[in-house]
Amino acid sequence: MNQTTNTILPAVNYSISDIERDTGLSKMTLRMWEHRYGFPDPQRDAQGNRSYLQSDLDKLLVIKRLLVAGYRPSKVARLSLDELHALSKTVQESGSGRHSGKTKNGQTLDREWIQWLKDNQSERFRRAVQQQLVKYGLAATIENIISPLAREVGTAWMQGELSVFQEHLFTETIQGILRDAMTAIDIKLPGEIRTPRVLLTTLPQEKHTLGLLMAECFFALENCECLSLGADTPLSEILAAAGELNADIVAIGVSTHAPVQEVIQNLKQLRQNLPVGTELWMGGNAALFNSKRLPANTVFFRKAQDIIEALAAWRAKREAI
Image (cartoon, rainbow, N blue to C red; front, side):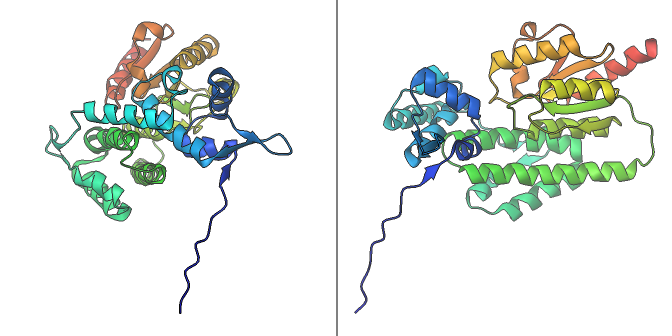
C-alpha cells in the first residue's frame, strides 16, 4: 500500500537584493520605509544582514502595484495585506479604457496578446510583434503597438493578472526585438556621418530601460549617433561621459516608478553641470510632469514620436548658427 507523506517545506527567506530584484523597489527605498513606516520589518542574521519573509515580499508586491496606480507610500505602507488587496481590487474595478482595436494606420492591438503573456506563450507573442514590425515598420510599431502594450502590461501587472516573471519576460522579449531592429538600421547606413550625437541613460536607482530603448530606436531612425550607458548611471559618470564623448544631447529616460522630487533634483544637477552646448532631454511616462517643474532649457517628450519634432528643431537651430 502506498503511503502519502506530507512534506513541510522550510520557510523561504529573502535578502534585500532579492526583494529589490523581485519588486523593483530600491534598497534605499526599502531602508527608508523601514525607518519611516516600520515596514518592512526584516529579521537580522548573525552578521546583521536583513532577512525578509515571503509575507513581506507578498505585501511589497501589492504595495508596488498601488504605487504604480498613484498611491503614496505613506498611505499604503502601514496597511495589512488584506487591506492592500481590498484597495487593489478597488483600483482594478475603477480602471477603464484599456487600449484595444485598430490604431490610426490600421494596426491592430488585440487583447489576445496579453492573454498569450498570461498563458506563457512568449514565442507566439514575439512572432506577432515581429509581424507588425515587418508590415508597418519600426516607428509605427513602437508608437501604435509596443508603447500601448507596455502600458497594458503595467496595468495587468498592477492588477495581479501578470506575475513578476511574466512582466520581465515581456520586457526582455520586446528589448530583443528592438535591438535586432536597430542592428538592421546600422547595416543599412554603414559609414554615414550621423548627427546629433546622443548619450542615453537613466538616473541613479532607475533600472527600467524599455522606454529608453524605444527612444533610442527613434534617434537611430533619424540618423543620430546613439551612445547608450544603460540604466542606473551615477550623475558624475553621466557628466563625465557627456564631456569626454562630446555629446550634443543627453537623453534621460524616466519611468512611472521614479520618485518625482528626486528626479527633478537630479535633472537640475545635470542641467547646471553639463558642458556648454549640450542639451538635456527627458522622456518617458514621468515626462507628463508639469514642465514648469523641470530645469530651464530642458526638452521633454511624452511619447517617442515627439523626438522627431525635437530633432527637427535642434537641426534647424544648428543650421541657423
